[in-house]
Image (cartoon, rainbow, N blue to C red; front, side, top):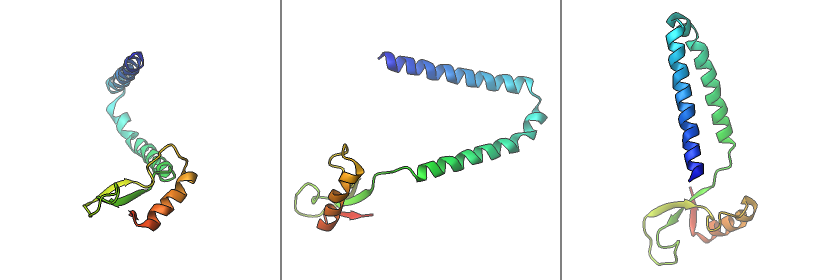
Length: 114
């Protein structure tokens, strides 16, 4: 409970400081000077977006597979496809340990790769 409360207080303090700083800038800095730097700010944000996209592209995300309804839990008959994690039975396993399980599931036809 203390952790949540302290986290909320830190967040609110950061929010108040950032809004207060923005208000001070708009109050004391002339508008033409601000407008002259809007292009530079846009270029900085564009570079940050690219860096975030590249880092997200190299992030190891879990593979997703389609499991036909009914077959995943051993019942007969097919239902509509549902999306689930591939070999997500034990999320504590390392990716190296999950590969053989994923291959076995794909070969058995229990899951279909999307």
